Length: 348
Image 1 (cartoon, rainbow, N blue to C red):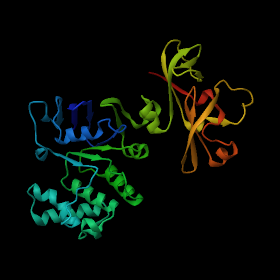
Image 2 (image 1 turned 180 degrees about the vertical axis):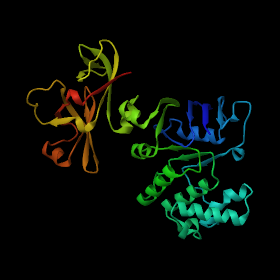
Image 3 (image 1 turned 60 degrees about the horizontal axis):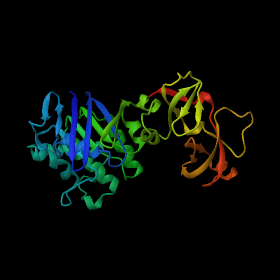
Image 4 (image 1 turned 30 degrees about the vertical axis):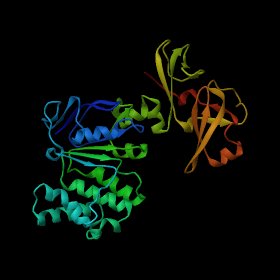
């Protein structure tokens, strides 16, 4: 079984164009900034938006090609949207059984399957609870169980891990990673940790365009846009090779240990933990040293991410103690240094 999607959707002034395939048993993450077209893509695959060009084919069956159109209820596709849409007058088990009953299942078998799905998401004991008796995370898990119950060929999930408690995040993530009832799983994720921990492959949308489709390993090693780098929490600098260095588009240059061909477009990847900060010029004057201004600081657990104005613009990570000792604050000037061996360069 595979999914072949070549999607062109136009809604007002917005156009989404994305083409990709997903193989049997694959779990694919879709990432992108707000307004990039992630939800529109899922809605098109589910049949809730008509495509204006291209085609959607599941296991050899055409669902939409501009001429043929299969209605959502006749597609072997299930969508879990951002809202749970549980029926308030039904218990958790009856909510899960609802999709099976609407597809013609007998009540007894539907209830049995619904209880199994509730067990899968760790909520069998809450089978008789009404939605208003559930926490937000529990409601999301019931909605997921309802989606799993119909065992679709393609399972679509729009930010299933957003705004739920840590226990529910762990349960939902484990279920999505291990569940084999759906032969293709596509998950929209805003959080890089969630996306990269779930998926084997990531598709990135920006402004309605597919800008990167790569394995998790490749997208970590070679992010193709500023958004992807920010999403991963790394620095991505673009420029051209000259005299063994990379002359950066925004001004300044950076040297890497790898040879760089003159005139060739090159991207340089630098992890924030590799950016060393100094209150005064470092001894020995390493080649990759710049005097920069602190644009802002963001506390992230046991680290502080320091946003630096360039050229080049960089993000560094330091401990809270180091930030206090150096007096880091917006507007402060600081020296930043990166070893050439910590710069990964690749052709654009």
